[in-house]
Amino acid sequence: VAEELVSNLEEEATNAQRSKRERDPSDEEDEEASDAAEEEATTARRSKRARKPSFAAKEMKMNEAAAMALEAADLVGTESWTPKRKSPAVRKSSPREATPAIRGQVTTWETRITMLKTYKELYNTCDLTHAPKESIVPQLRNFVLESRKQYKKFQKGKHSTLTAARIAELRALGFDFCPLESGNTKDNHDRRFQQKWDEQFKELEAYKAEHGDCLVSCMGSENVKLGNWVRGQRKLYNKAGREGINPVRLAKLDEIGFDFNPVASGSYIVKKRANMFPRVNANWEKHYNNLVLYKKEHGNIIVSPNAVGWPGLYDWIHCQRKEYKKWEAKDAKALMYDTWITKMNEVGFDWAPMKSDGFSKMLLERQSKHFNDLWHTHYEELQKFHHKNGHCYISRNGEEEVLASWIHVQRKHKRNRDQGKKTPLTDERIKLLNDIEIDWNPSLSGGMNKIVQAERDKDWEGVFKKLCSFKKKKGHASPKKAEPQLGSWACRMRKLHSQKKSGETTTLTDAKVAKLESIGFKFATGV
Image (cartoon, rainbow, N blue to C red; front, side, top):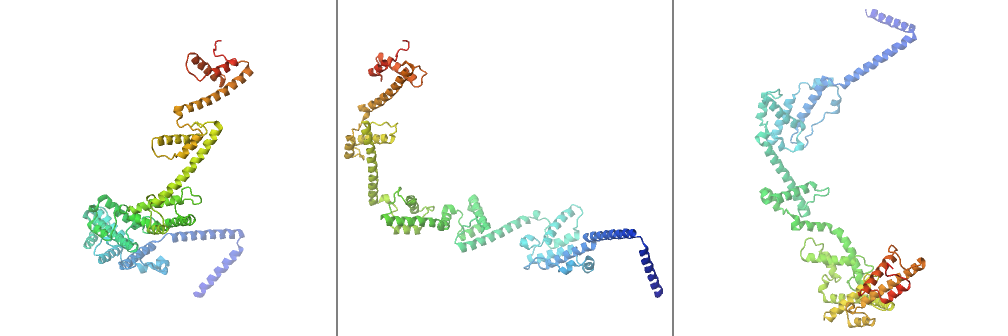
């Protein structure tokens, strides 16, 4: 029978080869195309089945998750709470090979309830808030939340995965289905808040041991969380007072010397000044070195505000005396350090120069020399003016406004001197001013009015010359009112002439009238 079967197979193979050689080439091409299309469709179906997990694959993943949860439950309370991963060989194994080995394991409920029992053995409660948040595995947390959710459905008579037997099992563990109604939520919140407070307080103790104070800054990358917590304690104190803070916490803070108001007490300023000392000291040393050089060059440290070549030194000295006064008054905001005071004393710096007789005498002498030089400068200018104009009457509205103000001050000093008051106007200065014929009281003498009238006469002569030029050009000396400058001036002359004829005193003299009539100026417009 075997030989007959073999012979039949050989005969069929021979016939197939013969028919293939006799087949038309176009038919062969069509057959090859159809075979390729069928093969491509088969490959697509296989890849689609590979992408869509089978029921066995789903079951394997669920069983793997359950096994990982059991392993995590065994590790509760140990250093590592991360569930162990399967080895690469197990993960890469096909679902069909892994399914028989995983089937028969415990269900999800048994896994989760085992994890909860293990947690209770460690913490003697089913409340997950008693353990650090990062140490609770997600499966256990989700199980607790879902159990409470399903319990509510069970109570309302809705479909729930939580049966009466499971509820009884959870209650036997002391599981709280409604923590809000029982009040455990608030208790847990207070307990966890106290736990966090204690943690921050320990950090504050460590900070004080390192820095010597409790002034934690909220700025910067370090201790930001602790700084915000410290600021929160001060805000609570300022808002509610000592009575509004837990007595136990208040006693702990007082024990380590916590300052609830560092700005008012000055401790904040003291620390700020200590931190900023390296920066401000560099600038201080720069000016201090300039002061030492100034003393070597001049033999003293009395710096004038107009000292050439020493920019900023006078202002810096004034600032040092100002801050020293604050420092003496125990002002916490005074920018003055003991090292600076020591160095300034070494060079003989006088912190209160106005209280020193020697300094005051020298200062007055220096000021007297300055003002004496300035007085003689103005006197020389007045001499030049007198030589040019023949008098010392200077209008304060003219170009010599500064010199006119100086003369006014000299007359004021003369009046005070005549009244027996002390003034800087000495006998020598009075003699110098009398030599150039200064008028000490121009209001009574009328000298100033004469000078003003002389200036007005000078201006009148200038306009009269323009009127003469107008006559040469126009042939008459009676400009119309619309004529620029001359028209209004002519109207004024006619008005003054009318007042003069009526007996009033005017500035239009007979000489001026004669001059105007000599060129044919008509005072009466109707003539």
